[in-house]
Image (cartoon, rainbow, N blue to C red; front, side, top):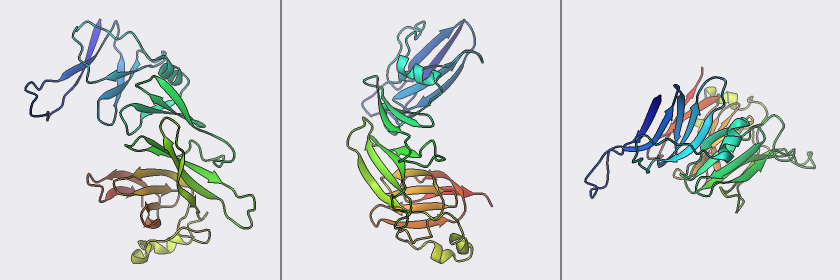
Amino acid sequence: EYTYSFYRFIPRQNFWIIKNEPIKFFIYTTPTEVDFDILPSITGKQALIKITENAKSKNRILVVNTDTEFKNDKKTVSSQNSILQQFENEGYDISWSKTDNYLIITDKDKIYSYNTDTDSTTLLFKKSTDTLTEDTFPTPWDTDKAGLFYYLTYTTPDNTDEEKPYYSITFKSLDGTNTTTLISKIYYWETREYISKFDDELIQRFEPFVNSPQCAQFAGKINSFIINNEAKGVLFKTEYGIYWYDKETEKYILVNNQPGNFISFAHDNSSFIYSVET
């Protein structure tokens, strides 16, 4: 018999807490060795746990409150969330939002939120021919600490002679209510011919610009985006470059005119780190 114990430790407690010890928040007893995949929520107060007993069995999945301490060392967790387990069995990807009480559940054409407090799901997005091109799945999305869900849509105007296709970023609450548009139209150039000239003209590259149907500076299909409300902007990764959108000025900056990968924002959100392959 194997018993696995998991702990949460807070190095800096409030001054009125005299006893600072690790919290044993989860114990699992099994006759055989198993593998665990643990994903904490944004503050670590909850944890998504996947248990794999062997290569042939399906993962067992459950959410555990890390503030809860087990009093009995022999206690095992026998209950599991049937809703999450069904999504896991069907091959959906499950990850935390940037809040403690919502998970995001995705596959190639649907996105759900799951409320860990109410044990309920909400369909946030469903693939349709009028929201995205057929080759842009799964749809790029993001969440924020305020409990909002952001997603990308694609529109082809009825009269294509007058207007080019464009992207939009829409957001709603994680419970599916209060849908609002963040950026109504993001036009893009289908080639990188124009931005390739900035290989040598670095100063001009970083000049803010306004997006428009005639603007060739925003190039390539959008692969992903990251919302940063503290920095008051949106980071875009396209097939040809990296862009920053300032929500206050409503202007864009071409950060790099080669495909790259976002790494991290600074703790004060004054800058970010990215990489490019040359």
